[in-house]
Image (cartoon, rainbow over all chains, first blue to last red):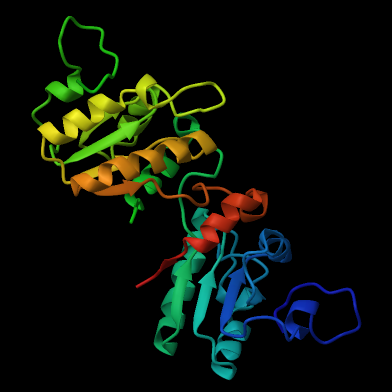
Length: 143
Length: 143
């Protein structure tokens, strides 16, 4: 269902089959490895949808090569209140997120994107310019 | 004035002396190198204040060892509308930002902090758990 990999003879993976997860949130990632990375943080309890790639006009990968049709069908069949676009913070990842945002918007679901900024434990003067710029633009108000 | 380094026989550095800068915003950094890092992004046009270190109880560095008294004097003398705490995203940097936030709050100035999250151009599965967790918690709504 989520297109994550599973080693059992089941129609769904362990996460999809779980009744302990928050059925309101769907996290869209590029690869099955991203599911494991997010699971390891223990900070997310919703479901996943694996695209199995990103849009890449140069490599000839279009929406029909990814699990986007299946994502839309899933969003129409199940009432999610939020879709987190967790594609990589790269050019292709950003383009894919932009595309998904556009096609999900008419469905009236809250669409979010992972935050950009300084990595935890890093050093300001070793951050690349783009990251520092994003951290500046996205600065948060302290209350 | 800002405690940045300057190689000229001047009382202020080039940035402090400039009339082209936005006098409303003050960016507090740890070291002079951080000033150069932020200047290189070309995304900031306000003034700076260099602390020359961070709070570190283990190394015996307290508020009186940093340019914090001078920062408060500056904030009282000049009407800034925003103070950006751009200390490093490390334990000491966070502790220093927390301390500064507390002592600046009574002055009624908007206090902000550089955003945390995924570095630009990075790969989700190679981000450390803490960074990914911060990126998840701080996710932004797309409009």
